[in-house]
Length: 274
Image 1 (tube, rainbow, N blue to C red):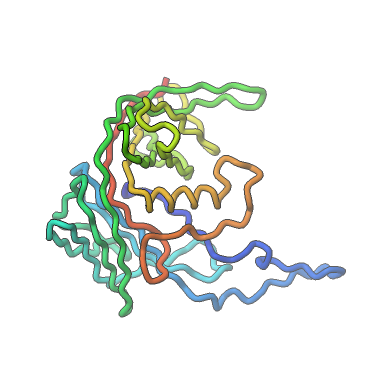
Image 2 (image 1 turned 135 degrees about the vertical axis):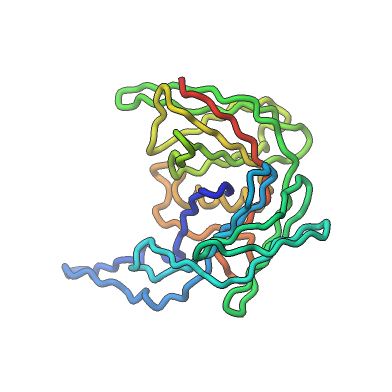
């Protein structure tokens, strides 16, 4: 979502049932020919309001099923971001596949349009930056059990009443190292106008007393929320019994591109874990 170090889990649209076909009565495992599957462009872009800029758009391309998790960078693309006030920024490629803004400043309430021209194909996306929500504090839950002893961060904030709000949270531990790959998205459908305390549960990393923790709260629009919520559900979330066959979430980018484009506000709380 958001954040220059945001990690996107790219899901291939291939059923787990065809990844390895084992013929009944035979011991030989047969792999179908998936190397010829059409490559897809993967775009991850954002516009923020925190003034830390520049904002970043990353462009990569998928590879064949058996090629591992190396996604080649796409260089030489022409990328622009414009808003509803008539401002346009042409992004500068600073490293293969990494493009940055040169002066665009995000503004809550504005609608932003991303255009990526690569290999004569135009990909576009639209995202509206919501109004910011104050991020009051971070407290902690301590969970103990027969096999667990974990500390979870708990953001505390007042949800505005009467309007739909969508949130995403990112945790950075000890000098902005992304804590883990969990996806934390939350909507106020059942808690509109309430004071929110939501525990950020980690499946693979635990906090420890004395750690320096930075928690970022993004106010995102509904299409971006839907994207990350679907990505979380398809990857199983915290449910060990969820489907093991993830699929690509619905992107807000046109022309069959994978990924997302998000215009979002950023509010940050720094705290020592206790």
